[in-house]
Length: 358
Image (cartoon, rainbow, N blue to C red; front, side, top):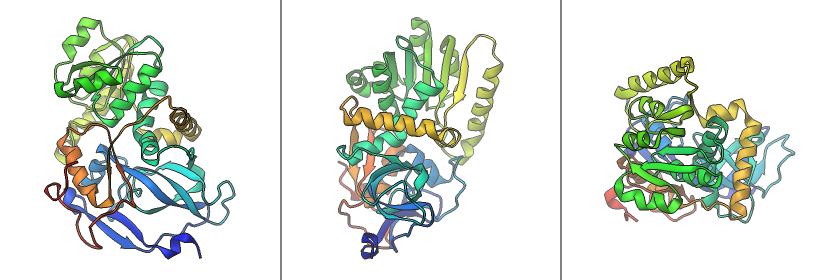
């Protein structure tokens, strides 16, 4: 009898698309790995802005229909092997990018996609590297082709990806700028960036003479303002959209993608690209593994220190979906499946007002 058979699966489940209240905590049978798969006992997963888009049903890459278990990434220990798995052993520590399924006590994943995690690092901190830090790192390294001494701007520098980008760009030798509301400028300075106003950064960039690399996850104006703010030969990396989030605003998003395509026809050397971590991983799995292993190595050596803003239980996932949508959270929200909670099978997770706001 394996260890998982003596326990119960606990996970967050989305039975229909909608507001945070549609998320419930449910119990069930522990899943069993099939051929080529492993089962992982999850130590930590995360909640981020992308999860709120999945919950609403507006995330472009999501093909699955409810019921859906949210959770885009995780770190945990393998506790069962499926038939034919020889490259992994029970007890090894691994991470994976899942898109859905990680806000759970157990998850089954293809063995071929796992990345080894050093045993000495904190699980919650390691989880922040899988999506947020990888997005920042690959946007700067592979798409932005950032070079030492270049001027880099991160739009939305207060978010998990933005903060990671500041630290990484600084470590890679860039002159780093970032936008956020004024009350968060001290945080940006502490991370190593020069803060710019969130809603009026264009004038400051013009005075500087433009940027070599801009990482834009806001899409406030379809990426047009970011593109105009580039120096000749500059690179814009679009990584997402926090401005338009509802179904009735999907048209501007599609327009933004069309604009990015049109920039390839511009003759002035500026370049724009869209980075999607799931798509890039499919096209270059070896590069994904290489980059994530690099981040884990840096973290294990103390070269980077990913910040965890909140460590929450499965019960609190719905409340933190709401907090993320309201804005103002600094850093990463990490879910610890074994952290005590109060929600019973079939109950909805508590509202924001029912929880300690931390």
